[in-house]
Image (cartoon, rainbow, N blue to C red; front, side):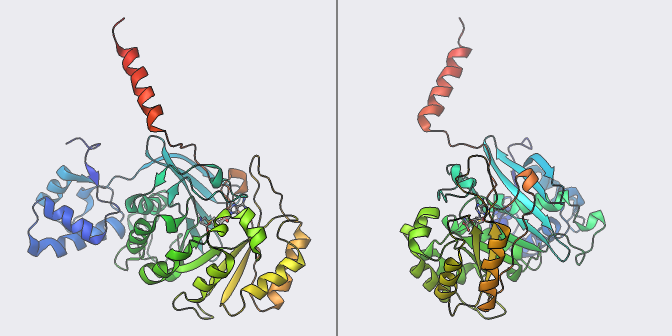
Length: 380
Ligand code: SAH
């Protein structure tokens, strides 16, 4: 088989990996051992070829290489911001691309990963929202984003790093797409990312952000159990209906009720409410008062996000003083309310600026394209 047609083992769940091995004839009694060895090779060592997995016999490595690869998707472009933020445009297949961002800080490094190519939500202030949904990412494609980042940051032990000297300490599902509209794949991917014998990013250091898909929040609590962030952005339904249209389906009261029920909340385990500061839209003192009123009783932290501009955006960012006044009020009401420093704006890597050129081709367009190709190949 050519290496292009062989499939990659990266991103299979543990069960998926076992079935792949069973499929190539590994005996049931050896499955558990072999898959653990492979898991370690892939996610602890970061091996990119089976030859490097010296805990496996030479013959078995050769067999694996015949059937599978450890290939990562292609990096279409990689950019580095003046502030050290990195952004990769990752190509899974022609026209299927997403962006992944790494934000280094003094005390941590956060990888922001995407769950969908495009998005269905159309939040008015979000650049990704102007790109139609092309498709959901598979769990393997979600995991591949962290593999690529670790490759590029040279974070594997073979590059001389030990595990307490990591650059990627936190993962946020805050890239392109709505993770709760791709639930199973996101869940499986985060299980792989948090596996203690593998990539080992604990669920307490993984944050899933949702625009408020209320019916999926209980399942996220039970089946994923990561930290939860809510893109709230307004405390009144009339405002939120406009800027986050999903609010018309799941209004604020229902959303906050689902938050109250989220398992394991305490002062040490709070919900993050994201609040983008839009000039003249949601940034008045009255808005701050309303916000504090509606979230009362929820262990929460409010992340104030200065609006990041993008070409054609219908909003502007609130004045700095206005953001501070808003933040002070929320803070005095007892909630941590950090103002998020915009990172990577110069490479369009900041919150809400991500977008890829991928477009979903309509079946009719695809057929027309094929026809015209056939025609052009016909002898004249
Ligand atoms: N769909 C999920 C995941 C995306 S997270 C969600 O909505 O939570 C991306 C975060 O950036 C969200 O909080 C989003 O509302 C915010 N955001 C979008 N556009 C922005 C912009 N232009 N400036 C600042 N934040 C923005």
